[in-house]
Length: 492
Figure 1 (cartoon, rainbow, N blue to C red):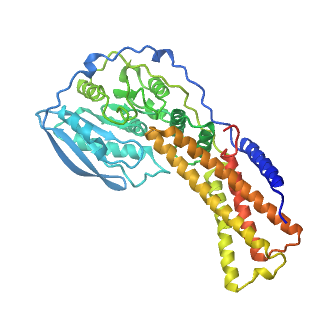
Figure 2 (spheres, helix red, strand yellow):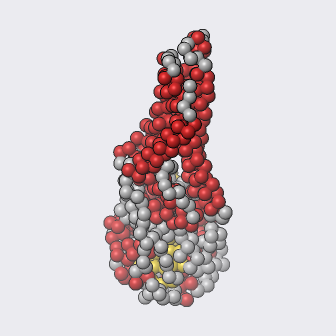
Figure 3 (cartoon, rainbow, N blue to C red):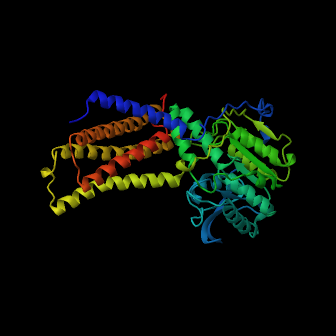
């Protein structure tokens, strides 16, 4: 009554080949960033002048004050740390990177700078109007300008040396604020991307996966998912705001930063800013947060920052100096996904699959409530075995979705801490791909049993037809989706 195992194996193998080919035909052009050769200006950089990172006296007593600042749509809590020494002092506002950060992440460097004679303000990031899917950099810039006004109203602040410090995403925010208001006396950009968020994330993804020695298919899976994301801020162009900066600007980059294309980001900055107003320093061994492997700050970071601010308005004669940066690959845009690769279509596909899977237990429950006896129908013995196959298929489909989500989470976690990551990444990718093949084999097996039953005269009830259509249809949608994301692609 059932098809032979050999026949089913041949059919399953043929379907794997078809889905692999479909995976190559459906997606947009592959994401394959070309290598980057360091421009001549970035080769053999001069050493950073010793006076820039000379020891700083950090013995000043400080006062800590918490305040609430009204901004557009909400009130933000901020902490001001001010040296208790006479006279007017330089002042600086910390502007955060991406995510829902708080002012507490700046405690150590804010206190260090305050003890060196610089008033600092750190504030909690807004929650209204900022989310994972949607963010307005101009709105964030207005928040930073509100904080600038708070500092400028203080009698102990030197308004001519009151500016903004921004890290990572803050590198898109600070230029907007500086271009909007002359009240910003200077700008400090730490690990500032200066390319679109999409390019930055794609570059970081490629760099992290190379460090993790992940298979090429992992990159294809993640970049195809990125190409379908329709977040409004991912294509943001930072160049117009950079052109609007006329304040002195200090840009600090780490040579061990895996999160931004620092050579291209620096070149964008050089092309956009007046040559007389920028100072660029590459710090050896520094990561994205100017730390050593996420630990302590690199020794030259805080002294360089403090000495530069204290020395304003005088600017160094050497515009770019420090360790030689090496960026292996260019920052490339992820190709936009076609309509069938967008989040809307993917969500609809998963919902249809879920509806199909839910149809099976609902149908069985309804049949039992009505007291229908399936054993009296033609070939009634076929259904219990087929139903077990369908149940296994449902659980495998659910397992595949859970495995993909867990694998993406694994990649993100190992991007932060890569210790021991390679075996786990390989194992996770193996699990995902094996589950995709298993559910395909289960679908072929169930279809074989069903076709053989039809050949032998089986006449399923209306409820059984609903179950078969729902589960096999849902599985078919999952298989096509898996093909789009490269789970059947060759080579590995």
